[in-house]
Length: 135
Image (cartoon, rainbow, N blue to C red; front, side):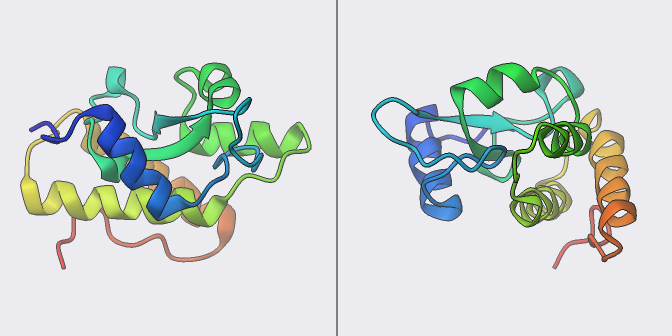
């Protein structure tokens, strides 16, 4: 199931939710640092084009991330001296997990998403939520 809204509308909604900086490098969006939507679960891994699977990212970070997993890219950003918004990534992945539980489908994305949530829990020491639990 695709999000019925077009990409510019989803981007506007993601910016309202996430704020006006890049999730990965935290640079504020300006005329020269333009926002894009970055799929946390990449399309090649079955990630849907839903707002719950997208975060605001600058073109540079979106391009450099490629198909790296969110957890691997968080670590790489930190290694490069950037200060990515781990909480935003965690919230968005948890939101995607709930959306998949509610809407169904996304068979290919489920194991990838569950693994990312487990890895986030292991690296943060917190609780990232139960994958695919609705509520």
